[in-house]
Amino acid sequence: MTVLDEIEAEIPSLRRYARALVRDADAADDLVQDCLERAVRRRSQWRRSGPVKAWLFRILLNCFRDGRRRDGRGLRVVGGEDAADVAAPGGQEVHLALREVHDAMARLPDDQRAALLLVALEGMTLAEAATVLSVKTDTLASRLARARASLRVMTGRNGATGSGGKKESRID
Amino acid sequence: MTERDPIDAEALIRMRHTGSDEADHLLNLSADPVVRETLDDWDRQDATLQALYGSVTDEPVPERLRTVIDEAAAHRALGSVFARLAAAVVLLAIGGAAGWGTARLLAPGVPEADLAELAVRAHETYTPEIVHPVEVPAERHDHLAAWLSNRVGMKITLPDLQAEGYRLLGGRIVPDEHGVAALLMYEDSGGKRMTLYIASEPGAEETGFRYASNDGISSVWWYEDGLGCAIVADLPRDRLKALGIVAYEQLTAL
Image (cartoon, rainbow over all chains, first blue to last red):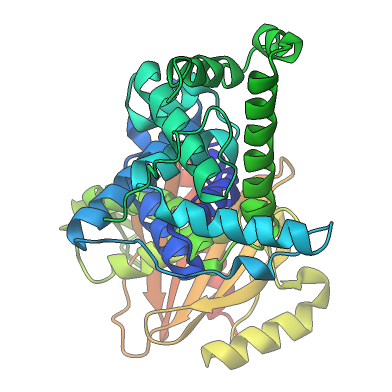
């Protein structure tokens, strides 16, 4: 497989992650396109020192951050994709849960949402996600703990390990 | 906040996302109801996120994303080959009665080199195809010749290069600078392919054979009777020249 083949193989995952991150299908594909263009230009720089997936996700997140800087408030989409369109078994209760979580994710700060999606949606380990985000695993663990706690609070599951009722999510 | 929070949460996160079977096993053993409830909740969070966004990977990949990859792959073939072709062009003049002539250097960027560039690009595009390298196979000889002649706008005879060890696979039309060119593909007994690119070039000055080669791809091209022709292959110069002469003679016959 050539590098280009390996990059191409990751396009579905990149699209999935981008869709969850920016919550709008077109904006997500814009982000993936930027990422691919950058990756393809720099592909000779990827020395196979790790999996191509991690390298690509790092580029995607850099593009995301660059976009945020450029656009001021950036790619935060209010509303965006309607989670109620997602088909789910189990009927109405599951429906609500999907909706709640989708809305709650929007209210997480970008870095928490980005981190949580790497482990929860993309199934990365702490070490892999830390590499992608260029942070220490301790930093990441703390960020994930906050994200998950916020999510619990926002979806009304304020259990014993919640943050004592204080809403952690900030709306910038 | 309780004493156990947030330190426990972070430790739990670390164990849960280590990706090791041992860590998973230890977590499963925990009898602490708070830990259990927390872990269950995190499982639900993950399941919900996967339900929300997981189906994106089932969608067909949009064309604009595939294009990024495809263009990069094409560039690799074209950019590297042609840039080097343009940098190393040698002219072989084949006079009539005067016999084989002098070699002289053509400056890069010379107009005739456009023909070679297009021919090389077509060669690189279609010779890797396994299932459908040509659009009309050689078995439909008359139809192929008629179709190509019609599209290119001049009578084209399909050169028979069997005596040179090349059998015709078939052909197709490709875009040319001013319209349409014919691309004929040949293959030797070892499966190595060679292409003959034929474009209509009314008013082009007749030239002797021009030759360029770099890094495994070589081309011989010439202008005659309103056609511009180029042979592209990974072959030594003499071989290409020999093929060029046979093709030239057959194309100008009749």
